[in-house]
Image (cartoon, rainbow, N blue to C red; front, side):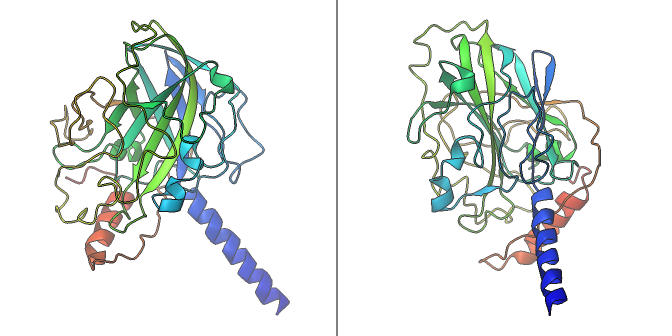
Length: 329
């Protein structure tokens, strides 16, 4: 009996570890030509935390869900139980492109390919001592990347081991900021509360900005937690698999992009058939060269049961997207 109990515990540990390694976080952050290591999750490798990363440490690679409870959690600010500061602050030039390269928990490539990538900024007095309080409306959106005209989501580039590029606005004041990068996976969002968030905060110091102290006055500021609701059209997408893999109008959650005209996102032409572009009207997605993974293994998550009876369609889409990273359309 004792042996059986131990075996049950061992299986439970393996199951939890497998789930964790099927998710991921930032592997490399690049700004002004300098590459910085991403954080290690405390539940994967707590002994090898980087000492020169501007990306704040998180506690777990497990996602935050779009339930009422999770969306109201302080984890929505900078990720699951984040550190109050990071060891470094990255210098970045206004108007330049920063990039985020992601990895899975087993140091393979990012395992998801359905859903948008969204980026916010928050102005700080000092980045290394900056943590917005709950309910403080100080975050403004600078980028959102959805799907291209073929229905290929931006996260597909991540699955292809490419980085996601984000342009820092040129018309913001110089100074310290937090960059909140948010990957939203929608593979289970046909059910309410089952979109998954992978949130991170990176400390940066912006230089060369053309904006004065009042240049952010017109920005639509939101709070995290508080910016999203469980029934937001971009988080609960019951018809996600009704489009035969083709592009469809997608409403990004949250406010309009800083400096852009508010609009519902629609597919826009991409410069190639393989790399997705943003579907906002203000920015264009930038994907940098692939970074060789240390262990190119595609992790897989088990889709949750749907409430609408389209499980076979969803399962086919997940198998295609996760186990065959080649272009599907």
